[in-house]
Length: 223
Image (cartoon, rainbow, N blue to C red; front, side, top):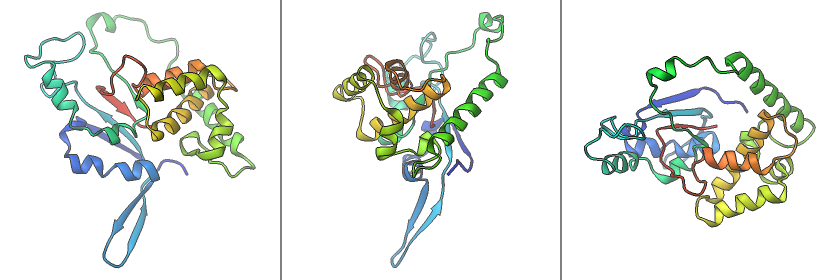
């Protein structure tokens, strides 16, 4: 089943804790369950979550800024409003540094929007072809169980890296599955058949659980 829409939350920590944690179930299952005394009603609620936030509430903290008078506590308190279980359901967590005048003078990137879109469409077609004739999900983001393991097929260095991340406490059981899905997608975008160590390493970096990184991030996207 494809995503039904995009939910964009700007300044994520400004939303109430209860409201944010209520997103955990639909992010995991694609459904909202309303429980009443005599019945449980399920509503479809599959969406892509896109969220953004400043490093701290004043907006002056973060790498390369240093103007926050309460750093690092300001950043810790602000980012701490987002629960660990919710962050565990966000697959791509990307820091976006401030744009400088020098950045504005740089030439455009080699890969533009059209080229990136073509790679994404090709990767999605690859996933659908891979699942054709099987009981597996047509998109990596929905794959699970034996089917997920079969399409990822990690080589020994890739599996060793993933196991190391788990041993260091950076991956929950949910995080393990989501990292496998993300690594498979990265490999598809790369046009690679097998999922290599480099693909797993990139997936771990996006989840911000590689050794030496933090779970907190100025911008986050769920895949």
